[in-house]
Amino acid sequence: MTNFFLYLGLGLFSLVLLCLYRGIFGPGVLNRIAAISAIGTKTLVILLLMGFIYRRVDMFVDISMVYALLNFIGTITAAKYLEIKGEV
Amino acid sequence: MTRVTDDIIIRTVARIFIPFIQLYALYVIMHGHHSPGGGFQGGVILGASFILYLITHGLEEAKLRMSEVKAGIFSSFGVLIYSGIGLLCLILGSNYLDYGELSAILRVVPAQARSLGILGVEIGVGIAVMAVMFSIFFDISTGGVLAEDDEGEEEGG
Image 1: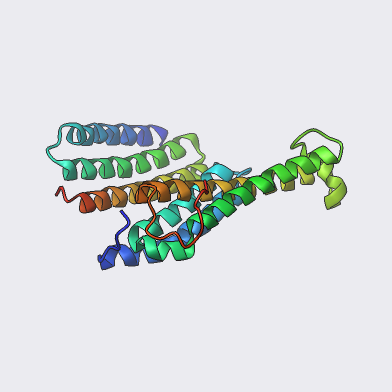
Image 2: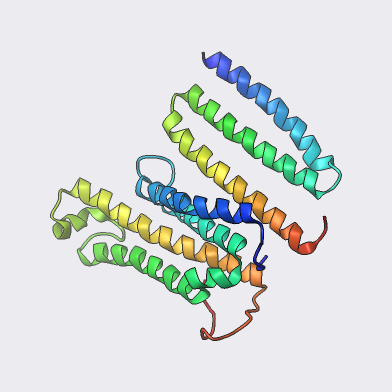
């Protein structure tokens, strides 16, 4: 069962690389914000899979909840900044 | 970043989320010695809830909940709790922040006194970090210029 979680995490990691390409070369700021948000969501799932691999899910749930919260606040802050600047 | 947004989705989501974020921050502070987290991490989450309130509800409404003067008072109060517990251990004849001597005051065994002492220190650190995080964001979002100066001089954080 550990191998299953490991390969699932590796598959999500390859998806993170695809999102990172869009975050670096993506045209416009909105594409980059969406890419960073998607990377954050995938990182959250990867953290939980690491918790399953190390058999310490109760600890990794705390970390992933904080990660989701900060990702949410960061996305809202970037959107608010773009709204004020009027670049979009 | 200080203007009031008129998006009802953002305001409603923030209004529903903020109590749960603060409750989770208190959990992180209280369980700092059993699970990942502690005073600094819980303080950052607690400060993030206030920052979310400032982003969604605007500067004027956020100043009613947590103004710059209050942030300065809270940060000083948190440092006072931290250094007060440390100096109390020093007065009782032990090293700085050596909580074992607190068992004479709390009337518990030294192991439990160490647990309670580190909990008090983490509460102080959490309050200080929350106030400083909010104060930094407050200064950045206003650019250091406040519209009115009816609260005296601002030198918190």
